[in-house]
Length: 172
Image 1 (tube, helix red, strand yellow):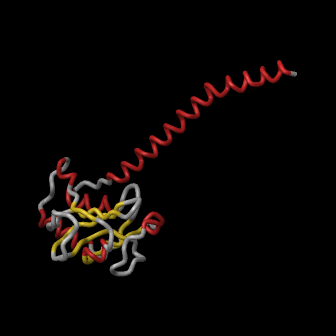
Image 2 (cartoon, helix red, strand yellow; image 1 turned 60 degrees about the vertical axis):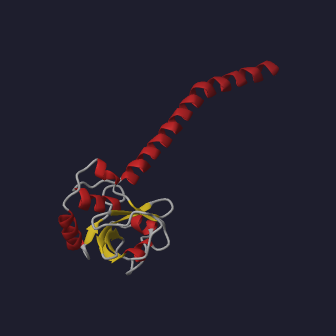
Image 3 (tube, helix red, strand yellow; image 1 turned 135 degrees about the horizontal axis):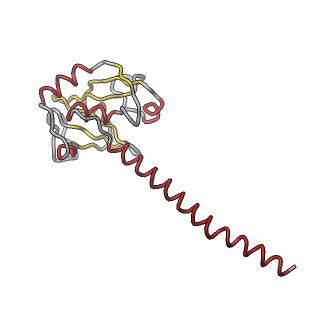
């Protein structure tokens, strides 16, 4: 396996986070330069996960591919941050279960069953996606911000319109 930009080399069972612009793709390192990951079924071998295809598809396929074919030219790192929150399952069990899923088609949902959910389920026995949680949090903040602005406009804007109408009447 070629050296990475990062000091930490993956060990079997490690979660690999791949940075793809507006989202991250996730894979599980299974050793010997290979990862197992959940990808849209339309992709051929070595094709990188396409975010639009992932969002539009309700099915995905579990693939075992060389890490460099999945990562491509994107930056990546080992990211086992949830180790602080959950107990890591025995590595032998993680790898056995990952191998059992290879070539299977699975339901896919960006909010409840994406590639990050898949690999965290393998490593911890708990499906979790921090990027979905962050996106929902951001959407909530934007929504609350919009409501706050609308409320301010309603409170202060209404009085200004009335005052403007009164001022226009005075000049007539």
